[in-house]
Image (cartoon, rainbow, N blue to C red):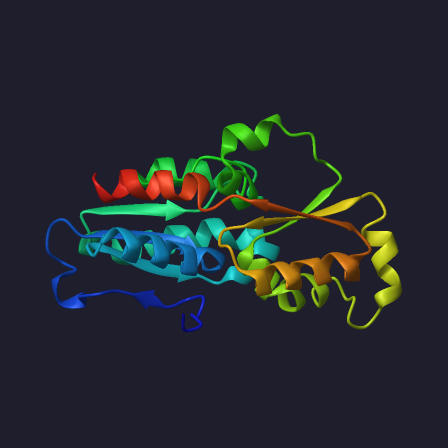
Length: 213
């Protein structure tokens, strides 16, 4: 699949976007590929997607204002707008903003939880696990290695990850090449490696409900 920019609106038919029945999903750019795959697999052609920059993963203070502004910019164009974020480090502020705006968001603290399924994730005691998704495996250098300064100061690795004991790769797809890349990420961080097939988890559950709203 072609690489997708983080902040681009993607639609099948913009000409009828102002008509009734169209749905907009405002999502973290890290979920773009998965949302488009689910939409296309299921034939949900009435669903459009706009993504906020995935780098907000590292700057959660920017998420609430960006979501609010995007909702207000597109509110008149769509019958329904949904937010494909968990809390994502906003400390409940995103949930409060969505309630004021009258839009639904995905339940759960973050994508690691809703990919695995919030109920299953909540039962785990994995405070020493570092998680990667398909997206973060592909973008490991841009979203983990460089933001932590490890490209310039690799000696910081042992300090940053002193209290972690494993890297858990939550695989949305069965891709041997991605699995091998994830394994190398674990090696670079000095962590044990575990691959856990999650598929799309609660993201799919929410999208299925949104598609029939």
